[in-house]
Length: 263
Ligand SMILES: Cc1cc2nc3c(=O)[nH]c(=O)nc-3n(C[C@H](O)[C@H](O)[C@H](O)COP(=O)(O)O)c2cc1C
Image (cartoon, rainbow, N blue to C red):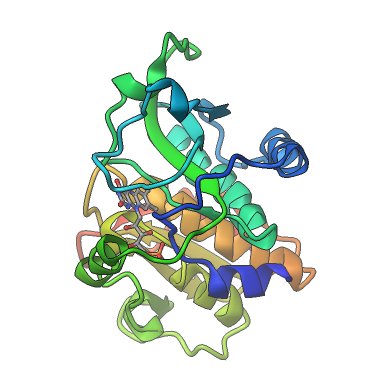
């Protein structure tokens, strides 16, 4: 399965078959964690932990997640760069997991941190902000179906509502040079499916913005930009991310976040 197929097919999995990860899958995922990079800086630590649920010790996701024994835990600094990097780096792991036939679900709200921490110490400035189960999906439970339905998880906003040509007034054509990468960004997961990412294309540059919706909006942008970048790499485009000194000024309450210039 190539990366575009993984992006198109991935969905959040909340019901797992109860089995632990194989040693091989664990090794591959930890290797991706180690080699995942980000151009945004910040401070992020990604750990993978197996919980022995038979011992009676149960990490709490308020019953949102069933049958998972392996969880990623993300220590994330309290600044924009760290949130962007967490989204950008960990989504590389999520996509790889899907390619290996494993399900995941980003969890930033519905978990009880103290039941995961277990004496964990994070580098200075980082806190456990996200956990993510990983394992083989079981048949979708009724609860999972209801959750997905209430979040509208299958739906995404139309391309022309998110991406603009130069001036925030003219919607971008999906046939634009960046059309495929932005389409893959559109399909990314986000907290409560809020899809905060926006972009303006000016010639060979994409300026990324976000519409603040929740505490996780910048993290969500990191995830969307990861999809964008994976698609650029897939097409053998090798652009550069940078902070523009004078990005186009948006007319709405969108916040500028980063730019990408094609080589
Ligand atoms: C940063 C982030 C935080 C999330 N937090 C939660 C959460 O706390 N609980 C939960 O059940 N789902 C959570 N989700 C999953 C989203 O609800 C899901 O990605 C969205 O509805 C789109 O569905 P999909 O992932 O199946 O495409 C989170 C997703 C992201 C990206």
